[in-house]
Image 1 (cartoon, rainbow over the protein chains, first blue to last red):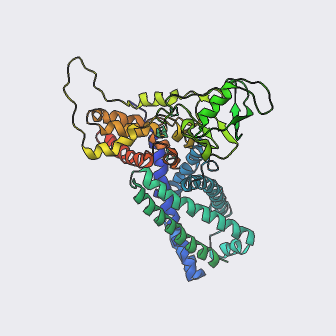
Image 2: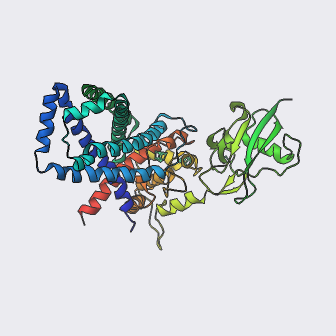
Image 3: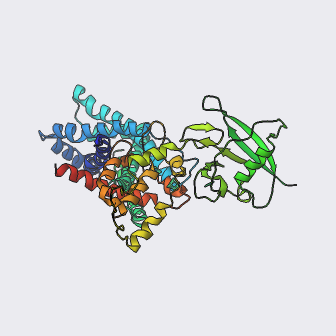
Length: 203
Length: 247
Ligand code: SF4
Ligand code: SF4
Ligand code: FES
């Protein structure tokens, strides 16, 4: 009887990237998109979220723990690989490499992002309002960091969707893999445009 | 007279440091990398004019069937017997495979792949004490689909190109995955289908594949390794769920 833990850990890693972490990424973007209707709409949406007693629980169990698992187990998975994209210059081999690079960028970005905007708030007690983000986004350095962090995250998400479909045996043959590649590129472009618009709206 | 310039990575034994040595051999028509190595063997003198030891390498069939002569030629893992000098840029750079323990010079020990084949039970179980009669028929479409897999010569090109085959990871590699598919497709082999699927959901199994898809690109036998891994991914998904839900 073979030990299946390893298999399960890998598959959970793949699953957690989509559910709940990927879904959360979309919800997060959606909530932020209220800013496109103006600061008041955004403040109202955030207030609504924070007024629920369940929110902190969701933050820990549906977001925090899965992100920590996906992020730190993922670092291990990255560590045991041996990249060779310069020797074997194939498209997927480069995507494989970029998936790992964006993983590290996203992880650092998310840790910082969560610390300054969520954890520090517990100590200082400042509420998250449009004004605070406006200050952040108006600083060109932070704005650039945000753009980089955001693009890394959605690249990792879109390319991760491609990998997810293969890992779980959804896309199998070359044709389905190709079509799915196009769809994932489209998802990346659409989310990218949406996110940059949202970030700019905070400026 | 035209000459061929070769740059070879050499190592006297696994404990010593590797070093590079260059050789020039006379060009003859239709020469391949093995014939260059044979020329060096006749007269082991490097470009500096120093007498040296002949290169050690492995080869057998000389027609791209056994896989023994696999080495890294100008950066890519391939068979030396099928690498024609006229198609290669010079100097021709030869290195041993990096994913297997080195024996000497260009010779490595590829036993790891054979051990993996044992782990996944890459055979059709027909041992018995009495005559079992003729085996079941295999349909034409299945035959056509799996024939390419049966041509795998455990050369190790796919292992060399796979980012997850290395000494930090236990991944058995695409070679073993393809053979699971082959033996599960055989009606008698399929009697052990679950055992093989369980073997690749264990340590070093299919979940280690990082989806770089290099393996299929480098396989000299053009085995559709990626589609095979994809289909096994589906089967292991179902298998692991049913194992759990039927408990
Ligand atoms: S699958 Fe292809 S590359 Fe891999 S060992 Fe077999 S023949 Fe060689
Ligand atoms: S697709 Fe999987 S098995 Fe093939 S080279 Fe990539 S990681 Fe290795
Ligand atoms: S000697 Fe058999 S493949 Fe080259």
